[in-house]
Length: 194
Image 1 (cartoon, one colour):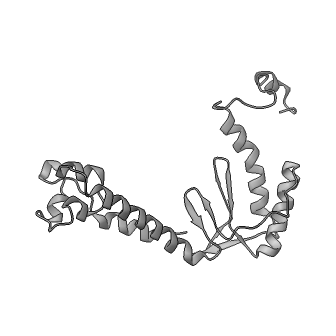
Image 2 (tube, rainbow, N blue to C red):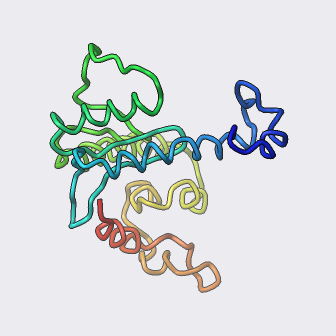
């Protein structure tokens, strides 16, 4: 900004920082973060994970950065050096290293094969717990469908179904209750690439 004095006059209200909730804040953050991300992506000695013939390097979401590093003993020191050069901050090297961590609600493990298994099991356990709680609530059939549209056993109170699933899946105008077809959710999940 110092290079362009005409911009400096327009941004005089910015002194040391932006106020929380300022609409300019995300744009300034993105502008300052993208050069770091580009440098990390283009660094010749930083190796990234390759999955399904696609290189996965860095994910930026709001103020979170997630790196997908391969050959960690050589890649990580280069990432830390790059970060220190950009930010003029020093990274503490003597902090303990975690074997797993949570990123945007997903548990990340060192072994890529366990990520889907462990996360899906946690989700299934929470769904089952919620269903066991909700099954005892005195709700009408329409309320049960509105509360959760993903479990047929919940709709019928763990009893035998009284109406065919295909009938329930029809649109309300065609005599159904708009229960989703589970295959429509299942197939796209199988096609998502990591």
